[in-house]
Amino acid sequence: MNAHIIILILALVGFGESCYLIYERKRKRPPVCVIGNECGEVWASPYSRTLGIPNEILGVVFYTVIAVVEVLLYRGDTSLVLINGEYAILIAGTFMSCYFTYLQWRVICAWCFWCTLSAVITVVMIATRLLF
Image (cartoon, rainbow, N blue to C red; front, side):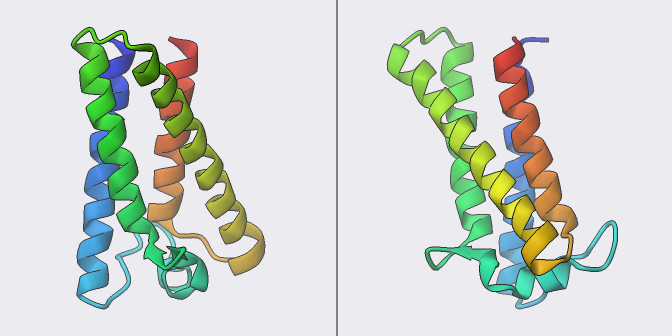
């Protein structure tokens, strides 16, 4: 399978996950924890926002941009700006995911299934890009 298709599918999954989290925030309730029961703790922490913006909104932006870039690359756009932009966005997303994972582990001392899933999606996307 083409790497662009794999990354596009992962971006769509991440987009859906982020939309679910936006929905739950609008309803003013923590997301359902699929595994464990600490999502509410992470959700209520001050680290659930970056520069005042809920992290799930940043996730929607991140996954949307990656999806659009992957469609353009799949369709044959070989612009160096687009290719380098894809790497830059994936690297930035990976660093943010590592930072949020660290916060869960060492600062909040609680694990959110959705946050961890997003980090895994991001790491798999960059690994796919680097390996293929």
